[in-house]
Length: 339
Image (tube, rainbow, N blue to C red):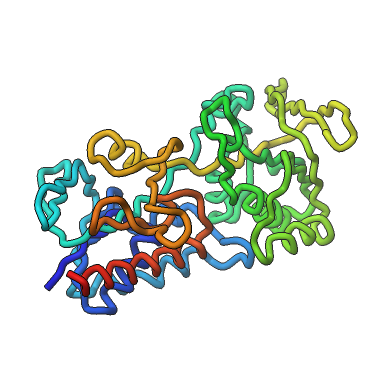
């Protein structure tokens, strides 16, 4: 019986494992943290329909009891040995895991907002990231560290994306719609709060994304300012002074806010950056794994029997990630049948 190893226990890895287990293929699922779920654990609701993220994650928990699943938590991969027909995964704890095929579903990191020093993250207490705001949504409690309910919030798009200064010239694709989703969620919890979204341009590529944008303006009175934030500074009362330019009218703009939220983009995982140097898998200039081609072979690598799933190849929504993972599982099944 062929055995498959899936590296990464986020939704991509879980979906691949689910599809393979349904085909009675034994799977070893390797997750570096103490829980399955990956980045989706950080979210309260998903765009564009505000679906409960925890419900989606819970739909995979039954896999843990499948006798064909070996789940390894708190396990980090150190190296993959490609020298023999049956691959061998070596963990940092010295465990050796043989596998006939390997799926890399290692997800993404979020941009470290401290690298954008002009925004004051890590310096000013009322500058937070979109990930931190999601935790407030989960707790249904939006307050500043001092316990104040904010009266005005600024959302700053494209933090760590489309930015040559930090080395990320690509678009993370999901920050715009995430900002709109979060702005609406904030208004639902705090109906009287003023919200301003500062954007370069809005990239609403999904079927219902534009509708969400229109609803934000029409139904929630969320304001959109076309212009990149140039500077954020802390005032005496801990509010944040925002300096930007409204490029639609060609004038500078200043305002204060009780809180600003930095929409941090998606970056390649530490795993892919590590493997660029130690394992010979093809990684692009941004650190994401390169499939053979981005069209009809998006889950295959240059090494036979090594597959890719989800945001290991670049930014994707949850729905796109699950679709890609299902395609990867089908490619694995075809590989098993052919070998």
